[in-house]
Image (spheres, rainbow, N blue to C red):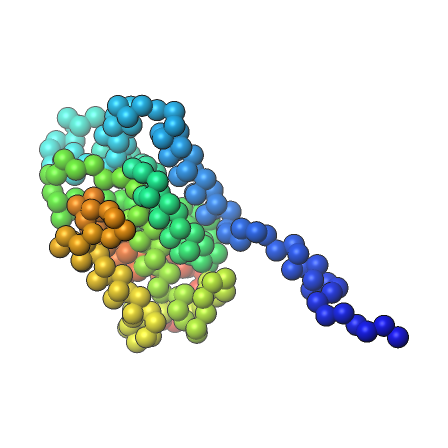
Amino acid sequence: MQTPRMGGGRMDHERRREPAINLPPVVIGALALLFAIFLVQEFLLSYRTNVMIWQDFGFLPVRYAHSLSQQGWAWLWSPLTYSLLHGGWTHIVFNAIWLAIFGAPVARRIGAVRFLILWVTSAAASAFFFAATDWGAVTVLIGASGVVSAYMGAACRFVFAGGRFLPQAHLGPRLAIADVFRDRTARAFVLVWLAGNLLIAVGVSFAGVSAGEIAWQAHIGGFLFGFLTFPLFDVKRPRTLVF
C-alpha cells in the first residue's frame, strides 16, 4: 500500500499554472505603454527633443490663462498626454509600482473600459486641480502620479472592506465615505497619504526628490477625484451605500 503524497493532483497542477505576473491585461498594457514611451525618450531622443515633447504634450497651466486660440492645439490633448510622460527612472518606477498595486484591484472590479475612462478623466481632473492651485504657471506637469492617485482613492472605497486585500480585494463591498473613515485601516491609509502630500506642499522632500519637483496638487486632485467619483464607475455593484 502506497502512502499518499501531499500536494499532488489537480490542485498541484493548477498551482503550477499560476501566472508569474498576476496583473489584469489592461494594467500590463498601461505599464508597457508608459515604459515604451519612456525608453524611446531615454535612449533614442536627444534632450532638446525631449524638452520639445514635454512642452507640446506636457500640461502647462499658463496655456489656460490666455486665449486658447493663441495656444495651438496642445491645450486639447495635454490634459491626457502629460500622464504618459516621465522625467526619469525614479519617477516612472515609483509610478509603475503604485499603478500595479492599486490599479490591479480597480481594473478587476470595474473592467478595462471603465479603467481607461477613469484614467482619462482623472488625468484631466488632476491637471486642472494643479492649474487651479498654480494658475498661469509656466511649470510643465508630467507623469502618471495623478492618475495613480485616483486609483488609490477609488481603491480606498473597497479594498479595505471585510479585511480583504490583494488578490481578492476587488470582491469587497463598496463603502460609503463615512464607512471608509470608520474603518481603522482605511482611515489610517487616507490620513497618512494626505499628510505625506501636505508635507511635500510645505517643502519636505522624500526619497531624495526635491519637494519642488513633486506635483502634490495633482496627487491630491487625482485622489479626491477617484475617491469621490468611484461609485459612478462601479456601476455593476449594488448601490446600497450612499456616497
